[in-house]
Length: 219
Image 1 (spheres, rainbow, N blue to C red):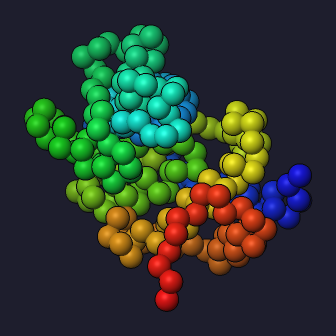
Image 2: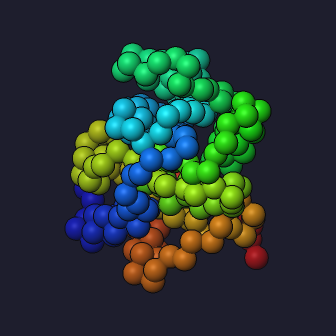
Image 3: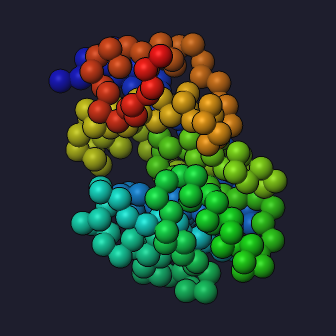
């Protein structure tokens, strides 16, 4: 049972992870692969609304997606887009990336090799990965404008879709930890975390929501 305080803290972090950008037309829509086919659906919806003339899906497989997406996340996303009516020539696939940094670097290289001029990217991710994806893209693809997007939904709705509130809060906490750690490792730009959000993160860590934290070197 999630306490009232823990849920309030999770909602604060959930809101912080989203960039709250207004979708607008961009050179390309990039859907970041994951277990969540909703990312593909949202990318297609934005394409069909005229927000990008081209889609690139990126992602290999991971331990959490291998069984569900054996041909690779990006390939399954592309198949979903074709089922939803996107012409095949307007959906490119980058099938090798295994983390967010590789997503950005390999998509950038793919588009450069294809001779595509990219001035802006509509970057579509899971809702709680928006800020992390944005910070990574700004570090690794600094010359383009990045507009973040995800499926519009509340934390309650996302938990219902996953079916495990503890797992979801673990993921929120893990994503915030990476916002603190990864700029020091050169993986993303620094994204300042407001004091109330960091305090919520610390309370959740103290409350045992640590399943998605990465190990840090001992001082």
